[in-house]
Amino acid sequence: MARRHDAKARNAKAMGPLDYTRRWWLRLTIAFTFVALYAPILALMAFSFNDSRRNIVWRGFTTKYYEKAWHNDSLIQAFTNTLTIAVVNTLISTVLGVLVAIALWRFRFPGKAVYEGFMALPIVIPEICMGVAMMAFFARVGWPTNLPWPLTLANIAIAHIAFSFPFVAVIVRGRLVGFNRELEDAAKDLGATEWQTMRDIVLPYLKPGIIAGALIAFTLSLDDFVITFFTAGPNSITLPVKIFSMLRFSVTPEVNAASTVLIAFTVVATVFAMGLQTPSRRTPGEEG
Figure 1 (cartoon, helix red, strand yellow):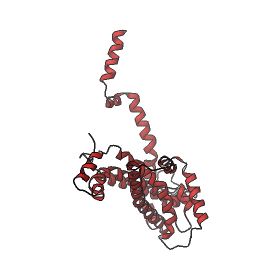
Figure 2: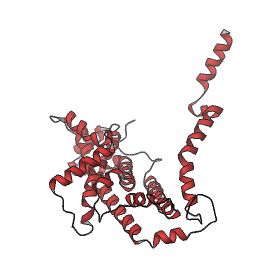
Figure 3: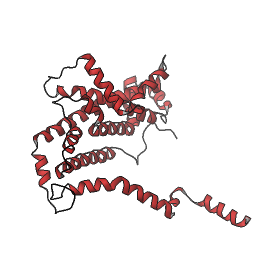
Figure 4: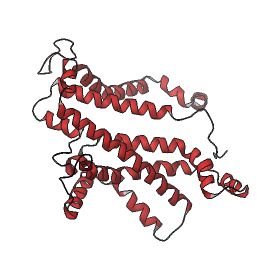
């Protein structure tokens, strides 16, 4: 018994992290997880080519519902609004998140812990609470609703920025944990100014975190429904809200086509952001 126990212990110690994928139960769990996550998405994308209005039984392959979606002016306008809000949200949230992360990492000031707690509220509170709060805020300040485009999207963009920039700040600050401050001090000793140190030392090191935070901000805004639903006006409908309004009548291949375009756009943005990173090259300022 003792020898058998020792043999099992030696095998467990010799087994690496990737060796556990050889266990049948772990493979089955991973396969079930992937099926549960991606099978509905693949089914939605497949039925967007279904030649049937009822969209229940496969009747044949067609692309006419993509053509209908392309010629649907309200759908195109909703997609334009969504993309505009996502881009504005990404730019502003990334800048705010980076500044907040650097400030919390570098400086000590009274109420720092309280500020960190309030900054994390958009992350931890339910999204519907955030949407109701932003709706009450805009109603309280008397936000105008008869503004020209794209100013009609300003209230949604503000709500998305308030929701997104804490995610960027958390990601960037996590990246700053491994920063070697001796390089910053060395740059200053060699005559670099604060701006030169930030531009040539800190920001290149933060590049992976900034890209990851920008991607999070973009996808959060692109796919958001709850906050947008509470803050959107009659002339500022986004694509998720438009798809929801179409679903109230029936699940048609046109709805699936619009959803597939949104999914594809998110995947392309993710691949593009991952391509901007340099995982194989060591980043300046990294400890070790």
